[in-house]
Image (tube, rainbow over all chains, first blue to last red; front, side, top):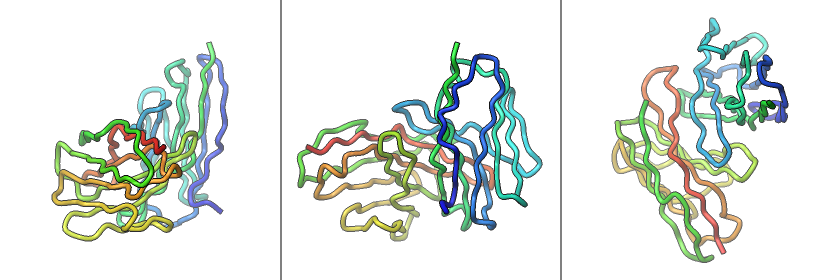
Length: 110
Length: 115
């Protein structure tokens, strides 16, 4: 089993739709969790940290479920500009061990 | 968050030669990381570089092939040595600031092609 697993997609959704991605992790001692966005031929950029109580940033909502060892990202009212690959990131070992998921590709269609 | 300048942005190199990639951070970061990313794949961690100590390499990566320097808290280099076409990839550096929810900032990447 991979340490961090994501559905690779692609998720093809119409503009305005709501879409959710999940990411599961295997290390129960994982400490911090993030969602990154990577555009084609660009470096990953931090989208949001994921807090234990869940957090929201505009149209984006992140949730953490430690008992089931997964994190989720919900995007409401999808925009064309949301098209990208979304990577979940899990850290452990005092933040020295950083593991990226394989990414979920989102394509928002007009 | 920190801003990382990475160079070169791309290079085409002959097999058997070496290339050194540099990353300069605009603030001090405790940990820096070097990744490789093949087209359409996720990031693979090569090594973690802490200032003042030897880099820690992941399985499948060795110091002789990928020597790393970390002379201070704002700078690091990765050298890809004795290159072969299999080393063609995007190489990314990343730094992490302080605090549990401080994310990892990336350089813009080096697109390496070995011919």
